[in-house]
Every structure is written in structure tokens, then in C-alpha cells.
Length: 104
Image (cartoon, rainbow, N blue to C red):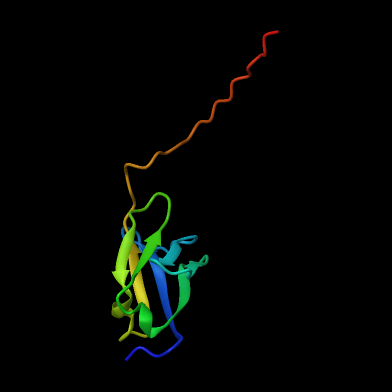
């Protein structure tokens, strides 16, 4: 049973090498609640019973977004999330600034 203000915990790891993934944004969809994974991939979120039907999104540049229902966290003490790298993401971004002259 989901308790009011229950704290959920988890770890985000890379699907391929199993290493922790830091700076993953963890957001409860439609709510003003979010967290970020630390250098060890660990995170925690405080949820309430009215979040039961909502989803949690795991987002990080260079990885595919992962969605999971809040209800899946209810029966677990700790939740491990594996993110797959997005090979279609850009390797490098180049910004070019042009100087414009004003004609008089």
C-alpha cells in the first residue's frame, strides 16, 4: 500500500556497461516534483497516494527516455533503472556566430 509521503529510492545505470549514470532528470509527469541522480546514479523522490496513476520519466541527453508507472515503485524498497544510449544523438554541437554590420 502506498503511504502518504512515501520516499522511493533507486539507482540509474547504463544498460550496456552497468555503470552509474549521473545527472539523470527524474520527473513525475504532471506534478511539480523532480529529482536528479547523483554521481553514483542514486535518486530519491517523495510520492503520495494521488500519484498512483502517474508516470515517472527518466531523461538524460544521450540516452533514451524511460517511463515507468509510479505504482511499480509501491512494492519495492529500491528500483534500478537501466538507460540505453541513444546512438542517434549528436556527438558534437558547433555554434557559429556571424558578426553583422549595420549599414548607414
